[in-house]
Length: 140
Image (cartoon, rainbow, N blue to C red; front, top):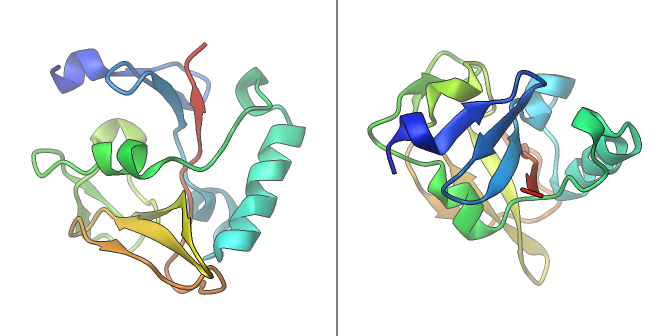
């Protein structure tokens, strides 16, 4: 599926992803709060997003590994908050944190996908250095 057919900007700060059959929040938690957040603080961010019924939904959640990894694409170039190149489709706009926590957990760690290099890391859920989340919900 070409990127032109994969992503649609819904005009309400969400992006429909037809390949994964989900809707992404256009901005990540760093763009919204201007703070790095550990896994638990990102849970608070998710809860607030749902309480506020962002884009009419209370079903925002962390992405799965497959969902988060699907955004990493060497043919797509964007810039993170530092102006450094990341491989995230430009439909999401520049200035993101360049990473996302996922729902995947192992003991006190959780999986993070890094869009600057495609590396998958398992930091402590208490870590907050350069960590943020890009929320997603199912396409209904």
